[in-house]
Image (cartoon, rainbow, N blue to C red; front, side, top):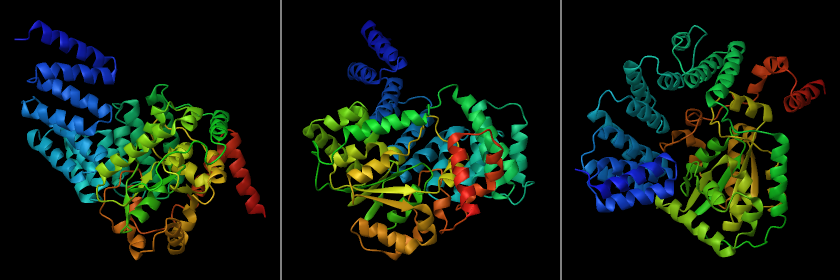
Length: 486
């Protein structure tokens, strides 16, 4: 029977959780569970809140308590543990084991099959992913996530490919939510693209992007070119000299290497190549730099003026987090494309940091972004990197996607020389790596290098030219037209 004090503590914790006041809710649940530890659902809620706060170890401990105390629906706990292992702890084998435990407890638990399929894709197990998605479809035939992921495992041979027909049937069912419809339209567009039906693919991608905006219900990150330029100018003003109030760590261990640039510009390919080097561990898209920027208030002037001891404390926390994820690593890549905003912060924390900026033909980048269902939180900027290159000459190396694909060995040698590392032939065999890869390019980076994506925009040139005029797109197309006429 619940006593009055227990109920009061529970009500307080639940109210704070519902209000999204995460740190206070964590403290409230800890107070509740210190006095009344035999509450498995409250342990689960504490685990959920700790996940939100980025406290992976605390979340795992809370989930363990929920299981130990006999929580009902334990498969959901194992699902959340698997997400922690995969997303926050770089332990995909443990994630897979927990997903299999969830399925053993509840063979009809759809989320476990979807997550298992995604994990198998990360690990490069195409057949394992296919089996998981097919089982998910057996449980829910028109599940958009399973269908779209299944479609992404292969290429279509013609517009009448069975997978294309299957997705069209699902789209015609009239039973889809806007987000699910957008997801399937993106998948359909990519299948049509793969078999050369570019006109139909363009129509599908256009509908998909429109549907994604509807699904976001006004939560799409606002993008304004002039506003991005203002933001870039604020960073340039705050970081006008390379050594002001630097602080930081001169000899960090492990040594971080930052890969940044426009989304879909080849950063995952570059990291996969470097991760095949015996001295480099591919860290993937780490969240630490944006989290540190948030802790400093986001404001460029505040980041630039933060005390040196504060910067050093953050730098040590960054390294501790990296060591927790990759305890044996000596060099770790941090492939977070939008870190281009925070090069000044990176250079304050690690004055000797080496930074790789990936660059790709802007129209090919545009097409690659346009054909992916990316997070509605993403907005883009181009100009900051030029400022950082002027401020930190010799510490930022631009890597052109086209050069990396067409002339891989000399380009890889150039990058490794920049990192003061010897060339290793394994870097040319990067596609044979068995490490987990978490990216929209998961299958592209498991193929040998090819040039199919160079000049891909030309497949959609006619469609782009048919659109109402847009200053940026019109300028890019005009440059290409001028190039053809010369």
